[in-house]
Length: 239
Image (cartoon, rainbow, N blue to C red; front, top):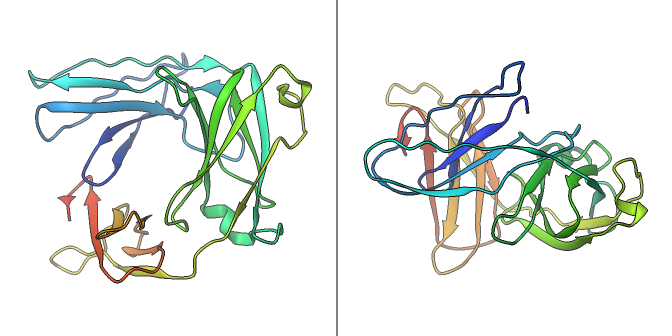
């Protein structure tokens, strides 16, 4: 699938690298790792409002002991489709906040497959799947934690690949508290694409964002009095 990406584990969160497939839908990739050890490697299609009817394979756990390893992934065609919608706490539109959301469908079993999407301006989204049990997750820079809902995909016409029936509606209430700032190098130049994250000591609360072209980041978080903030850049490493 064109645009499939492989991800590797990094400080705080998985750090993605992007590789575009050729005309035969094949991509070769190489990832730089800091050291030998145990890694979880996954491949996904970048979330898009125009979803592709393919399922990402299960991630693979590998042990690097001699500096190199080969991990191959094969995407498969989906046989079912989940139509959904995200709304605010009053069942209304989230407006521009829809642009910051990612939607995921994941089979919570060993070897489970997954797919990803993004909502359109009205909050509508499409996820491709096979029959089975899934967790639907909604996340993004504007959310301190992912919201998850369970759904069972059946042989019902509701989940046909041509269906337009909304099978699941997820209510969100975006937080109003946030942490923001700039990421710059020693000369004061902005660093874009830095994965910034915060966690609250003694609490599961946290948030995540990515710095823009001006180095600016803004992560929405629950109220907490003792946040730690860090970042990871593919160019500079741990910040």
